[in-house]
Image (cartoon, rainbow, N blue to C red; front, side, top):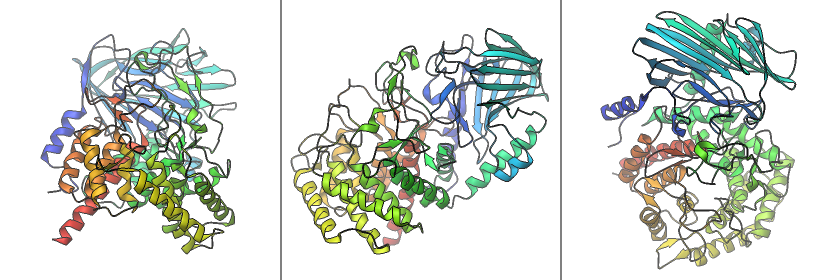
Amino acid sequence: MIPGAEPDASQRRRQTRASRGPAFSHPIPRYQPIGDYGVIGDGRSIALVSSTGSVDWWCLPRFDGDPVFGRILDADLGGSFVIRPVDAFTTTRRYLQGTNVLETEFTTASGIVRVTDFMPALTESQKHEYPVPYREIVRRIEGASGRVHIEIRVDARPGYGRTTPRVRQRRPTRFTIEWGNQALHLASSAPLGTDQGAVTGRIVVSAGERFDLALAYSPEAPADLPVLDNLEVIQRLTEQFWREWSSRCWYAGPYRDAVIRSALALKLLTYAPSGAVIAAPTTSLPEEIGGVRNWDYRYCWLRDAAFTIRALLRLGYEREAHAFAEWLLYTTRVTHPEFQALYTAFGGADIPEKILPHLEGYRGSSPVRTGNAAAAQFQLDVYGEVIDALTLYRRSGGTFDRDARRLLRGMGRIVMERWREPDEGIWEVRSGRAQHVHSKVMAWLGLERLLELATFDPLPIRVDEIRRTRDAIRAWVLDHGYDPRLGSFTRTPGHELDAALLRIPLTSLIDGTDPRIIGTVDAIRTHLARGELVYRYLGPDGLPPGEGAFVVCSFWLVEALAHIGRVDAALEYFERLLDRRSDLGLLAEEIDPETGEARGNFPQALSHVGLINAALTIAERSRAARHER
């Protein structure tokens, strides 16, 4: 039986166990586990905060900028912003209910302190009344009991660790950290000092005492300097901002808390000025420790749009879904009629992939990369995904102007002209192009959706030609994409399995109860899954082997099971996946089935989109099953 919106007793026990952090004694490990991080943000930048009190990643001025703190990629060169007890400690942490405000409680032998981390998130009208810096991290230290000695170190290393900035002490509590024409400005309520390009100090925090630090970024003068006097108000308004946003979610079914946390993670990954949702805020966190599968995910993948827009609309976030769709319409005009697989959050198409050989990489996992060469690949499925996303937009009240209608015609034309070509596929393999079955299915879906859109608006398309091509693609998939010996659709004609084929039940290519659909789900469950964890594929892809189970594929299996009527199995797997989240409810790109550790970039938008859609599909299918009885 599906539990209600509130967690049951067993869930609460799991949550309590998960929230307890490990005990630390000096020296702190050089690298924290990937899933150890919490994230804070303001809709333009994101910082990763470890349970040891260290901000180890913060890119400026936006998601894909250079990090000023990059310790997560090089423990020696990267730089960090540390607030933690001097003595051995344990940690417990949480997000304040319904917010992205992070609270970490440090317990030592002599007392307890809490550190509250956030970036100001205010409405535009509130910013006029309470001006805040261009970018800012606020860290507030509060004594809960006893007396705790705290160490503070702000060690910025811009330019991926290549630059040691100049530190100027303006007053005992005011510092400027400068490089080129850029600067960080630090305000502290306790006097600090300097040490070899860093701001450092120690304080003693007793019960009832509070110390504040605010670190602001300025790309050029004159700068908006951080102010400590109004932090109580800024924190209250920030909490209010997040709670008002999360309260707009209209989903009230099972696992609502998990769904809300994933929605809040997506909101952090949304670039507010454009509405684009980036894949993750990090680069080069490895899919295998010591391996080479280290990619830059600080961009927006067009393919993810349909999944994300579907999730946002199902939760009632129409404004965000429409903003993302309108970003799609704007951005794809940059390279029309051809598409790239990914663009910057601001709609840029130039994303050259570069290697940074001077960085060690997370736990020695090199190379460290910036940019992503997948932008130059031909991925046929992207066209179908974008048309599908824009169909969801139109169904929910969006409108197309003349340029948008021409853009849709161009998308259809590319699909009709190029659907027979091999492509690199959804997983962006680096072994060359192939006839990926999933890509053909998405090409079929794109034309199917285009015909639907033509019933809404007068599109400049040849309906009969689109129908003929659509039918030809479907025939190809059924003739060449299904292997009767395996009883499943395959990755390429007659070869291997592909977890992306779990999306077929959502496309209406064939009926969801068709034996070929059920066979595909069963084959993937048998050959690609380890329990609830699902690998993308097992065949060669042009890189050395060694990746974890792909989290979104695991949620796709949950959805597919629910769609074919196996709701109990879907529910069992879903609950197991919830237990795989971090203590803060966050998900990476992959999970190592052997160790259970998070792998890849973190947190991953598509993983959280998968959680949301799986939860809502289980709820919908469970209601349908009850009505049928």
